[in-house]
Length: 426
Image (cartoon, rainbow, N blue to C red; front, side, top):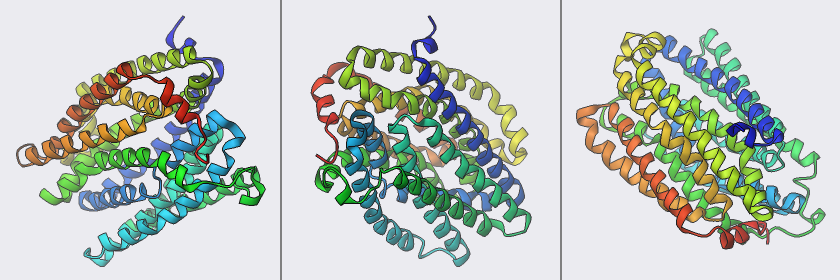
């Protein structure tokens, strides 16, 4: 029996639906980035990527890990998790206020033209977290097809409007506005669907009132881990822009744009496996162990294959896709590709920790990764340029792999799983 056959038909179907939709959406996003790089030049491409990174990092304050927590609670408790879902959404609205304030403050010193682009992209990334919140509610209910097309639809709509804006000569302004309109529009539609289905009913219609304190206590360690992780993935852009220039940001981003779409593989598999693993952990521990082992092996094989493809294919891919001006991105792509092997496995191991109620460990481990990545990148940028953060990412991912593996092997899942099984509104 193959590894894939170990997963039941429903899980394979959900994973395939997520994979196809992610592939479609990522291709659209990547195609848009190629058009921006070739049409507007490397300086504008660097500004575009910096704006996305800034907005993406700040928007995680409004997330606080709530979407993953809701997916877990819904998988375990079903409709009983409805009070927590509504409480989580209201908490996200409150947490959006400091995001808006920070976005205004951190862009205050920029030239007016750049600041408008950064503000629009930042608002788009904030809207994206609300879209993902709706999508993760569907994930927890194992309605992965609905989740998949919500997210893919937003990406396709963004690419379509942005390409039209570029054709009309709107430049980065049009691209940023396309991001905002698409993310906000699809997010509102997704939340409207959830309310119509009874998942966002008014508090007096629910069986129990929401308890924000319990929700925050469970979500905070996860939110810290996610925030640090996002900061970790975008730190290179900030350090390169600070120590070098926009061209260095463009060289790194060009390679990163090739590696990031590969995340559709662990994302697709975990979209199907995570709810099933969370549920099995409370009702069928043997099945949970099998799911954990099989998903880890599958992701290890996928990450290893990707590492080989990018290592040997980088000298041809970068000049072919971006032109001779991006030859400095070749070693960046090679090392980012190499990091895919531990990164794919880590994607699964960190989700296993969350399902076991051990999200505090994730916060600690990702914090260590961030520190290691920052120190190595800062030290090697003067000599290695944009290759420095790619090399440090590989070391950081290996560190996380060792930490997660040791924790999963040396700690017990039973007590933490019982804690995780209590809905966040209790």
